[in-house]
Length: 275
Image (cartoon, rainbow, N blue to C red; front, side, top):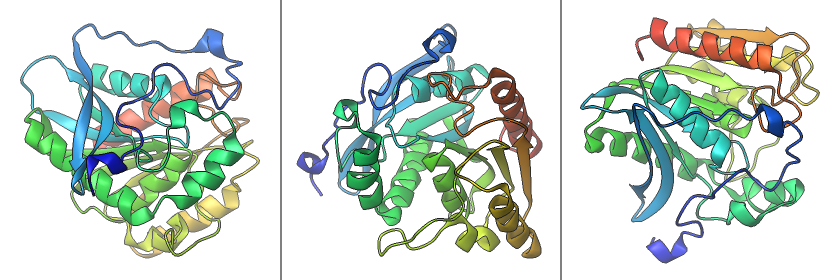
């Protein structure tokens, strides 16, 4: 695969155009003071995909956290999450996993994104791109990949489950309202529930009690399947929180639930060897 096959060769600027930014007044903006933060290129499969990385200034090496985007691309919200993690002492890296398929900076229709991008994104490619991101962090010299974690939001939460079932180097995972069921296809053959018994690290699931799209009972069933296989899973349901409760740029944002989940995630990483 050559560079010309990459549609998005750089990251978008600003917030995604695909949602109504009704919570704009609540958007969190984390500064770069005391940090190194930059767009980078991740070598993968004979090509390079863009990514955003942030870490504390200094030599490190710093514990490493992969940040997996929603369906909207690595926009300012995802970049800010990387900076928040950097402020907490991590090298955080968010690769643009849909760079081969579309320029998400120009897409405004959520259903079109799901139909033309998300449904056509092979899980094997997504997982190998995350492997390549870990390799980049190791080669970059500032990331300690022996202290490796992963977190993701919405579709990224689903992909967090899948990656936690793939990479034995992971110390911990935190999935934010990631679907655990749904349909499968030749290129997306397994759901998080399907792989729950294969988790390679402790997984924290952060879900909303008012999420209309992800039944809590379905999530708990996936967790029970994992526990029955000797895996460690903790599911936290934030009461009255809707889907996307951490997304401060959307009307779904719930500050109290978002802050509670963030504290729990950092504690999970600390308690399981990522910090």
